[in-house]
Amino acid sequence: MATQATRGLRYSGDGIVEEFYDSNIKEANTQSFVQGDLVTVTPGTGTVAIFAADGIHIGGIALTNATNVSSGNVAIRIQKILPGEYYIANVYNGGSATTTAITQLGKCYGLVKVSAGVWAVDTNLSTITSCNVQVVGFVYGPDIDSSGAPYNKALGDTAGEVYIKFMTTDGTASQMLDFGGF
Image (cartoon, rainbow, N blue to C red; front, side, top):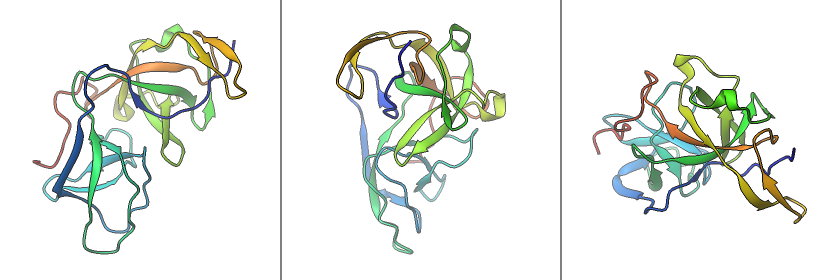
């Protein structure tokens, strides 16, 4: 089996990805997230901060780097995560790449930050309190590895890619993720 490149979360659908920019959605004070990082939106204030705890609603994916301002709350752009959308992510166990397995199908897992702007499914986090995503399928087919050589993605690949959907904090399929009333 092959080792797949870790690419971070990406939208898997063929629909239009909704970019969300509103002057009321602002970066929380002293944030250091980068493009591609998962973010949460604080209800009521509409401020955006990097996702930090499993079991918390994920509002979206940052489309720009944080400005790291200490006050003023700069308006930012995020990609909203909406119900019914599927994303592609690599599979890790804690901080290390792990293989995809048929036993992962249908299970809920947490997420792990692999590097700046790169997140993966974390099979080490599998309790209902850490359930952020559910594995709904596996990514198969031709690709190019990091050296430029062609290979076929397959079940059992290290850092294999899976289709996921985001879940609510109680482990049910997301109906509407929290955008702080916006």
